[in-house]
Image (cartoon, rainbow, N blue to C red; front, side, top):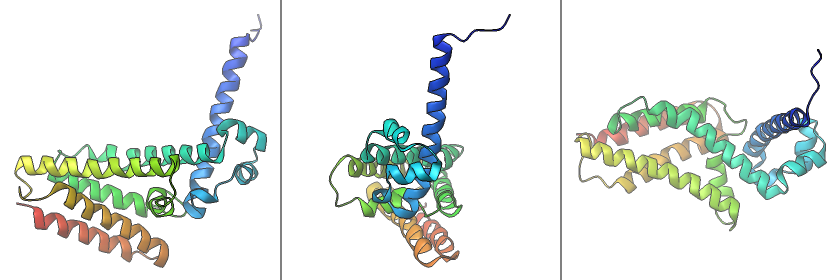
Length: 210
């Protein structure tokens, strides 16, 4: 006997289609934001680029600000998947710091984003714009700095990093290497940025290694 769709089935189908549309639009928005910046995002532009009705995109996100926040959330998830989760295979501490550097610089270099790391560019783009989007960028970057500092403290506790090391200072310097590499690569192109960054990361850690 032929199955008759129930209202619940129809509702589930609509929700699944809506989720797929949202993910497709966010994926396009992430790439657009990497090139044009978060302020370059627009619901009309995304609708045209994805072949989705403008009303549908607007209904999904409600406002440009909510679209920007969704892009930042997606970018954070990509960072977790490509950098943080793989690094957990290394023991916490000095080796984790080495692995985090390798994974982060590979993530910045491998073309994940058409226009470079969104969090790196958004840190400069949004730093003077108070509001929820700036707060979301600051929160993501604070979590990253805290993660670096956590592993520095673990390395000190394990005896593999000089106990006189200031975790916040070293985290600041390590982060600056990746941010500079992204800037250098986007502005000048070529492979020098990441070669220099890998050398700088290794040399900085070595100065603190015991």
